Image (cartoon, rainbow over all chains, first blue to last red; front, side, top):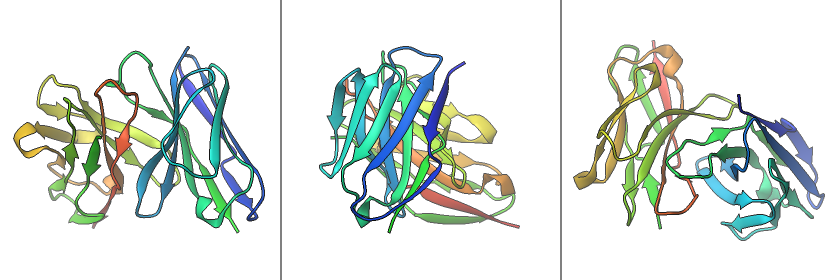
Length: 114
Length: 113
């Protein structure tokens, strides 16, 4: 069966520090991969999605970036965190063929930038 | 561009009462619509999805939703609320040949004893 791993579960970082959040999927091949951010009262904001290795689509211009070095690995990064980067970050995957299949979510990372 | 609007960021119902969570969508192409539930500090789980088959969709835990094209709505209902239904609920839309899933701002459901 398919599983999605996301870590760390919680993270406290000072302003200006770098960030690296990792997400890996097991039990499937060539998934679509997604990063969402959840902030209070703002729902889930799509940050990045990827349909293949090295293919990244950015939805929101900001100081975050994403990379997909391997088929089932998706990394969210920042060189210098801002206070506004605080939030709950969720990784998700879906079957690539069509978009009427559901998203499978990881358990999330609570990021606090102080 | 696709979007969804969830009316009511917080909804309170008594245990045993009808649950109605509202979602309206905007899409220039036939949409795929989803409802997800999120329990505290967890990821999201799919409740149900609409993919152009039956307009009345039944999901898990007794929830159902009806796709109404004329009203561009996909409201979530449950006849009788249970304490365990307390959570945050998200409506989402996809389709049109993209791989994006766009979520609403969520509705936090509180169930009163």
